[in-house]
Amino acid sequence: MERQKGFSLIEVLVSLILLTTTVLALLQQQWHSHRLLNQLSLQSGALQMLDNASEYCLSGFNRLPSKEQSFILKSTRLNDAVQLDVQWPGDGNSPSSLVRHLKRVVIS
Image (cartoon, rainbow, N blue to C red; front, side):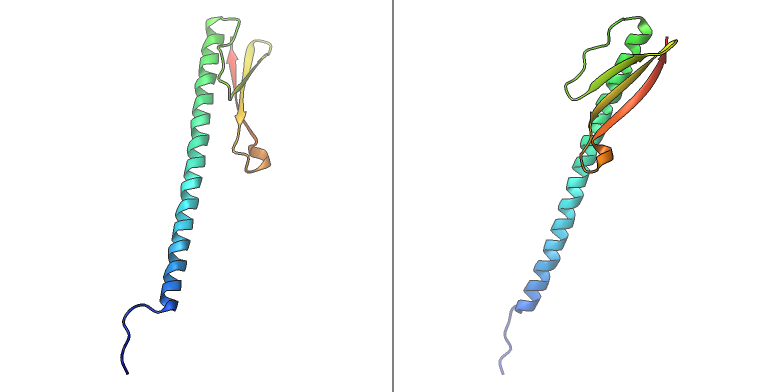
């Protein structure tokens, strides 16, 4: 009996399943990294905006600096301080992440 060369159908199917599983895992990891990078970028922008608003309050300006479109900046006067809130949209994957926010109290 003559021995045939090449791969069997089972070997090809197993290798395709392994390759597909690996590629899907890498794509999921890439998507997750991209999502985290976007969140980090938005948080960094919000922190910068909060720092600018804090400096405006400390320097005695009555109005807050202009804001970027994706952020909502609110200021609340307390007795001897100003509370600054910055909100921005979250990733939307869970109900608690629909809106993210940072707070800072500036004593004036």
